[in-house]
Length: 359
Length: 188
Image (cartoon, each protein chain N blue to C red):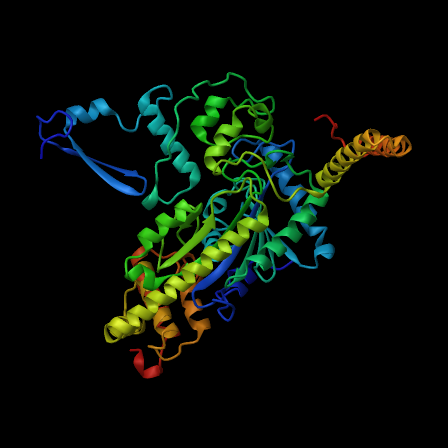
């Protein structure tokens, strides 16, 4: 079992690697399966006894089953975890904000490479989550499916012949599958095309959310698209539909980027390079400003308007600019205004040209 | 600006609603606005259906910037009084909270559920797709038995009685296996 420190490092996890299909526009793919155990009430209503029993059953099923899956997992209870550590796990997308607040009975099983995490006692007893870089819905589903098969061998799943997998919220009933892709859409955003696009998506049975999932707003031009319907459609179709939607949005974004370049090349270049200037020289940076500037710099690199800054450095900046990571890095809790100063200094350091730039 | 309802008093309150993706803004005076009570949850009244829409919109998890109202026919007002045998949840409680308390709730409210699921899942009420391995076996067996029964029927119709008897034995064997192997009963 790996210690928690391994998962708190600011090294970008595997799923942030950009060198995959559509990696410049689609940041990551996520598959989530919701599962519950028969004979236990759902977390919103269960007793302390039920909670700890479920926790044991699920963690045993995975930890004992390591050999059959061939992937080493680590188990952490959120109970004694400091708030900053929990926040770092949210910022790394290993747990949901909802689980981070369930300090009484929430726990997590996470694979060493951080691509698979199993949340225990979130809204459902079990949430299997699989993250992959770029657009890799099939691969992510395959992995999640393997974990699911391992668990079902050892656990009595709540399943009904006609309703499928039974979940606490009826919006997840059926397959319990939520497939999502996180996309960076700065050109569609700046040309005001996101509103109509989101409306179309809703009509197609897709949901558009912010970067941390349910109930969060879009930050830094990142949007999460996922299926809304989980019943009456086999897993393969749900994934295929999202795949085709994602590919179409990529084409739209590419079109919008091309139009921007054609019509306002110098204005675009000015705007994007200014953002790089802000990141390199600012002394106070709010998370919102940092996210927007980083989004612009990423777009600038993609368009060839900003001389190459390695993908890895940008991803590191994106991770570390978040409040949890900042405080983890500083080794202490920081007030919002202190965070903004610290954020500016860290990003300055990461994007430095040479030593003379900094004071 | 004058209140759109009474057309007398000055409008002091702006109500913004999203309808089919379009933003509708209305201006009312304080008095009319109080009478309208936009956000009160009342399951039996006309306004109630509005509140229900909001509730369902919440279930959809649609982002706040694109909440669409879903047309709901207000025919289903019958709220059963049964409560779930495992957790004690009532159907009214479920309607208010939008979430179940245990897997047995699905069995308890299976009469009402298709209505709810239809709305949430674009008309679908039945699961198609992955089935857990243990369920899968008995499910497969049931399907096999059904297919064999069909074969048996056609064999009888074609007066191939020997074949029919043979198939009948196969069916019996499978049924026995199903009863001893899986816990599920084979009623349909």
